[in-house]
Each structure stands twice: as structure tokens, then as C-alpha cells.
Image 1 (tube, one colour):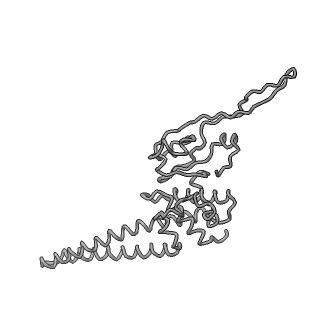
Image 2: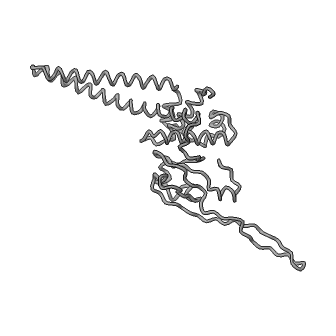
Image 3: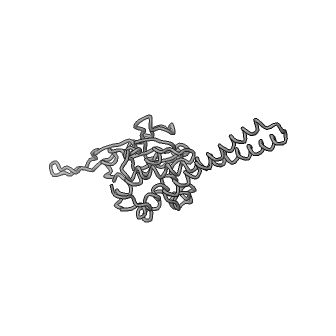
Length: 260
């Protein structure tokens, strides 16, 4: 397998991290987003994510809109994040050992003043531990983003289900005005419906005008060439992201490209 370009890996990890739901760090969600980004990159004829994002910056807004999660990763490397994870783990172990040692001393101490002093130290260390736990949770998401990006670049399981598009919570909170909903959506599997939204079927009938000649007289009539009732159909749902692809009937009738 060819060696993975580190700049490509970081950009893909940062985009997947920024586009995924900030309240969760779901590997399948990030890996699915990474898979879609790579599929879009390849379908549009770009050889690198750098070229893709420079030429079509509106496909993923996190590259330009100041997304904090994207910003936390884009200036890093995988090795830096791994090292940070190791350092946090060491700090947590040291603090936990210190707390246990202080508890042990407090249990055998007879002086009230000394016990109070030890309890204050325990409280201080517990606050430090909370801070470390918060840093560990944040770092775990970053580690997962890199793992998800590497997974996609190495051709791992496509958790997007072959999608070309995705949506976050806005499709639920802005359901009536959402562009995809207005064009027609269909949930193909209840497991995809993480937002508990309804199908919106919008029947479109396409016609062609046919000219016929009878007894020297030309007449025209409309003939149906096909119909569809949704443009997007779900392919997967993970974390805070639902994935989509075009309805094959729509793509065939409208001669639409898979990626736009």
C-alpha cells in the first residue's frame, strides 16, 4: 500500500473532525465523512484534498468558516496528537496515584490540622484530574479523527454506505426550509433515521413532446418519459450525521452526475 501523504491525512482528519457532531466523537461518523470527501474528490477529478478544497471551498465550509474543531487539528500532525495522548495518560496516572497516596496518609493521620491540609491537597488534585479528564476527552476525539481519516485513505469499510452527501442536525431543526427536504428525501432504512425525520416525497413527471404526421397533418402530444418522487435517499446514519446519495431514478431521468 502506498505511503499516506501526511498533509493529506491532516487535512482529511481536520475536515472530518470539523464536520462531525461536536457533542459526540463517533468513529463511524468521522470515517463516513472522510469516505464521502474522498469520493467527491475523486469524482470531481482532483488528485489531492488540497486541490479539491482550494478549487471548491464551498463543498465543506469548515475549511473557511472558522470551525473550531477544524482549527484544532489543521495545524497538527498525527504523531503530535498521539504524543499528546500519551502525555495526558501519564499525567492522569500521576495525579490518581497522588490522590490515593494523600487518602492513605489522611486515614492514618491523627492531627486535625494535618488532616485538613491533606484534604485540601486532595481537593486540588481532584480539580486537576477534572481538567485532565476534559483534555483527555478532547484529545480522544482528535485521535479518532486521524484514525478515521487513515481508515478512509487505506480503503477501509465505507461507513457512509456509498454516499456523496451528508447533513447534520440542521436537517431536523430546519426541516421545512432545508434544500434537500424541499427537493424530496426518502429514508431507505429506519437505522439511518437518527434525527427521526419524515420522508418528503415530491412527485416530478418528465415529458417529451412527440410530433406525428397523419394524412399530411402534424400533431404534437406530450409523452411521459419518467417520474420520480425524491432526489435524495439515505445510505447511513452515525453520530450526528445522516448520509445521502441520489435516487437512481432521478439521476437517470435528469442525467445527473452522482456527485452534484
